[in-house]
Length: 186
Image (cartoon, rainbow, N blue to C red; front, side, top):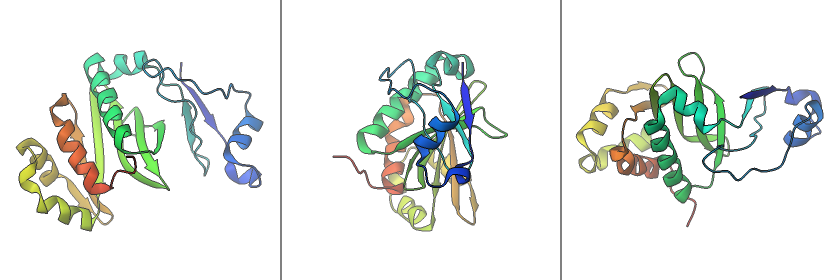
């Protein structure tokens, strides 16, 4: 079961996020450490956004398949080896069912997107980051370069969405993440 909480942060501006959520909803605030069964407990987002809790592995498996969920966990494990960041579940908007992103200081490193039998992975590259990708183009696989080259560039950057189907892409994704942001974990 998925629980969604909604609150307006502006109504209690002198309370911190956790106090604000606790005040409006009776919830268990104990941290759960079940890596494979649940992803992460509650992540509070300001500005009246949706807050999602406890997306079960079984629910993801029904949505995208066991193989893709295992790939998702493998990639998340790799990212958490190098980056200490908030990991946030959201609804997926109009096109996706769920979104799972890595953020720090209000900036997103990358996001995973889930919908019927599809696991997406997105990185948005700014101008300087695109220049760095061009400098090391020969280090990427042809399939990654094709996706990168065909991605649309908007005013705020190049939005590159990968359809993840196997583990072969993990090393290329790590190189792209290192371009986006230097690892903050040693």
